[in-house]
Image 1: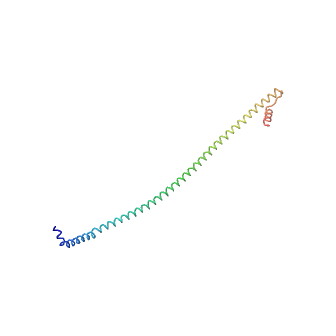
Image 2: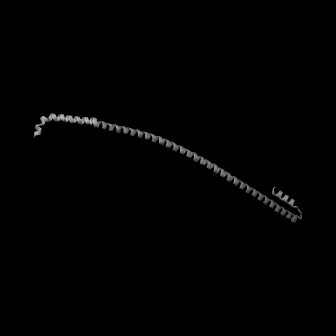
Image 3: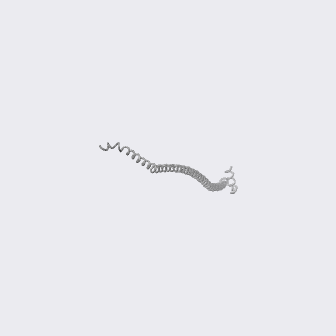
Length: 163
């Protein structure tokens, strides 16, 4: 093979050109591509750091919003409890007022009924006394043959009935 026979003659030349091409590639990568790669990595790191900082700020804002929400909920619950208690108290007062009005109306009706009963009882007693006085007058006239006045008969019946 003739290529193997020429190896001694071209070996140094090939090593030289290998070193030159390798150097050009190394310089091209070092000055051309490496800064772009490092810039992209730095840009990515900066973006990740910014995203993490924004996420932390968002988390803090969300925590603050949640605390404010919970505070408003607690205030609303307290206010609702106050309104409920006030409504219960107002309802109780209104119920007590209605009960008092109903009691007063019932008391008036009861007093009127008692007055009617007393009047009826007094009228009945007066009628009974009048009938008893008339009957006593008639009995005395028939049995004893005496004439008794209505007034005397009424006094006698009252004295007997009331002790």
